[in-house]
Length: 290
Length: 234
Image (cartoon, rainbow over all chains, first blue to last red; front, top):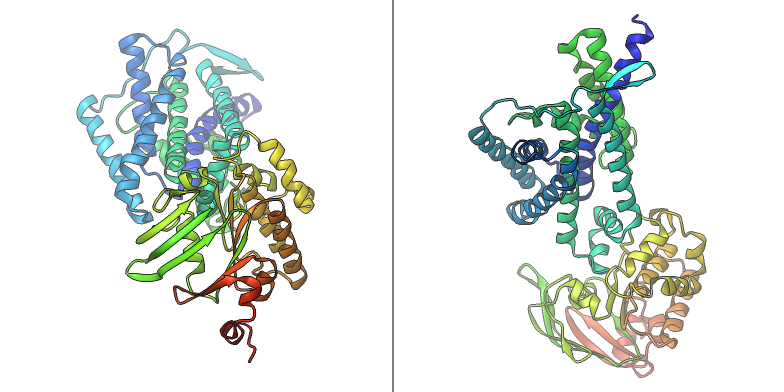
């Protein structure tokens, strides 16, 4: 049993990673909860966000945190356009079609980026990349601490949006009662696209918070999206709070797994949890709530 | 206020409405009666834009509205309270009502909210509760209240009494009459012939996608055909 001096940093590290996972999962769960589609292009779109942050930094010297004002709105627009222009049109309202369309999108996006960007792993260099903060005696990289706070602020903004604004109420209403929504005059296609856009904007935020302590390559989304799916299942499909809690749990499990079993087996705990949840609590920790 | 001429519509290749003519004057309650499956709900859905008409015209306040989107029809003040309520189960009563003014009546939302809970005091007690946890009668009140939030000029009530206990049905019809006496024009779509006729000025009886009988409610009540087919009287 390792002592606390090792355990605490490991748990804190897991929490910071988990908050970012949660952010990716929030977008996924929002899209699932409202549109009832599993967005297989989620990882590919995260990758696009990361490249956007990367090139803004390398070409124009824009700090990743300043990109928070640029990339999420662009990702929102991209999500809105994808949903209205491609996914709805090609899906014809059938779930299995939509599933294949998002899968196809992810293949196209990833291979295009392989072609354009090559499979190099790229990182950015910021003055604070290697700064650390001391918390509870543990030294944590500053970008990860910022990411942790940023993920919660984003979740908070999303919560206010969903519970306090007409758009948020319309999104939640449409998730469960399409006919009622139409009859109060909600433009369903627009609100569906807004939901998809918001989910993708979450990825834009995640990209800005992630890049200072991470890297980008055409395949970078894979790891995230698999974990995000696990989080969504763990937290309960469509549940925001579930996604947040699930993200943190998974982050910590991964960190502790890495500590006890070694870096390469670190993720095994995630998938053990995934299978256990599916067997014993298929609705997730907070299932049936939107 | 509403003038429907030779309206035809249906699903796929199946014709459900075979040329409907119907009119509603401002301030009236008009009942659209008929048993299950004659096309009443299809008719309301065409009026509110959920289903496209095949042919015919719908004039609302002098303007042709057939084929417009649901939103455009809500904008004009034709509000449809659907059969089966279709309230938002995962939203609170308050949020349901607020969304009633998503497109229309938004400026007066606070005032209309007070007005609606005046009419339905029981909704006030349930304000923070999720609509899915309400009883059938309460959900019906919520559905009507949600419709009222859009400041309707014509309110379509599709089967408001369905699934309610006899006592509640009585209450519901009293309420519809009260809304009407406050100046609201209502199209009451019902299977409940007797009680609908009591509060309606005029009635249309539908059969097999067509209007079979129509006229002033009190006169229609004595029609031998209506008595035979719908009231089970000799």
